[in-house]
Length: 108
Image (tube, rainbow, N blue to C red):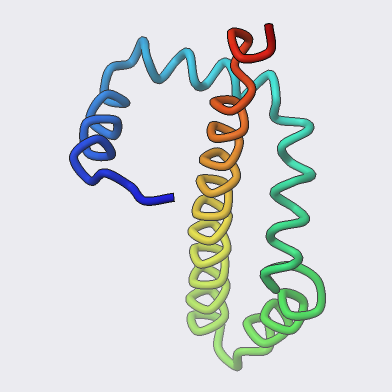
């Protein structure tokens, strides 16, 4: 799916309008329980959960000094949050595409 950079930039700027963002937030809140499972599968398949994550947690917790442990855990949490957001955006983007393909006008 080629992306028109100008359209993408305009769409991102439109999100600065709180009313437009609230509509999207409401849709996500309504779909969150179902989307959470899609996100979890994507994160698992990407290696961000399961054994890889457990190994990283153990490694961070095993740092010798308290400051090093805290830094390692903060870094791990930040990386996990960033990846979760990126995967979540990808899921949202794919969902938007699915919704575009199944507009009610097209179903009639």
